Image 1 (tube, rainbow, N blue to C red):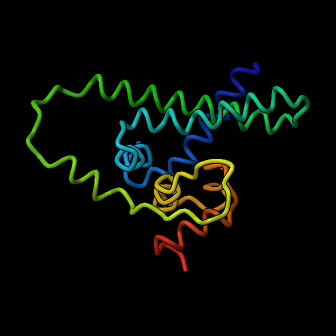
Image 2 (cartoon, rainbow, N blue to C red):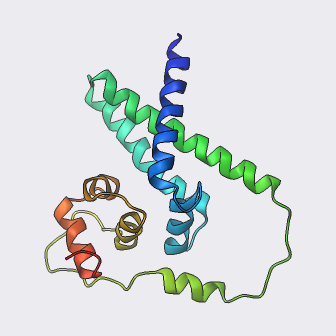
Length: 168
């Protein structure tokens, strides 16, 4: 087995496992929910999530030696985001073009957005994406994964979820 076929097999296995975990509302559910929250498209939501993986790979390159399993995981995740993007683009290309329907889309997007969180007095190094935290939690993500995705502590994730009434 070549290195590339080994990686593609790993990616396929990961995609199938994560599909069961994350795609309960359809293959692109998480990206569609994130798009509603952020006011973008599912493709833009995917790009934002994929950017975190790109930064992680750059950090690994800069830091030097890493275990091979870590490389496989990070590169595999990046490849999978590109495969999901490809599926989104293909699906969109196959859909017939429909005339716009007069619906209150802006109202639906506003209803999907959580209320803004009052910022605590503590100084923050990075702006925390409250909407992303809530969207990930609603999508079934666990707190450690949300903290990693949002580049904040697990306590910060808990704080935002409690403030939203999503966690006791």
